[in-house]
Image (cartoon, rainbow, N blue to C red; front, side, top):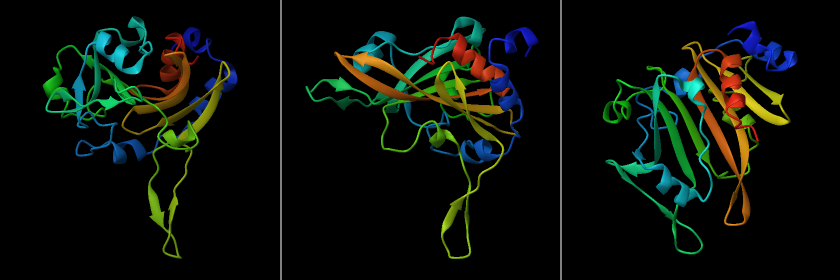
Length: 223
């Protein structure tokens, strides 16, 4: 990334992101055989923007065209065999508590993309979810291997591949991988039916940590 582009982020943030040491946590978690949401092999079904707005009751977070130049956008919700699976809200209306926004190479159609890993192609993915539990966010976005310790328990293995930085008053978690993948996590507030809701967002992309955070900031997604 050029010095001009980096200058949009505070120098302390740039320094912190550039100090990250890539590890293999994303490679291990998002391998092609994984059923985790971070893999395109997870069961997603494409939907239209109008339908997704009805399901969520709020605008859809999207990256700017410049940030995903040359790629096409696919909006999706959980589903099976291309058919979406909806939840039901308190008024009995179809809804969803999780959705995804994929930016795919134009030569990669959805049927092939759905059985690929985000680590293998130039794919950028946004995963948006209502908090399922009380795990701290964005700290929980970090993918961690677990190892057995002497007493037979498990402990998370931490490293220098993950950090939380403050960008425009928003806490942003960033993890880098030797594969070239970057994971970025933050929260956004949206109004739905007169109620304020907070969505947790995870972005998986390829490139530098600084570049990934800059793309999110440029799109205005940190507020």
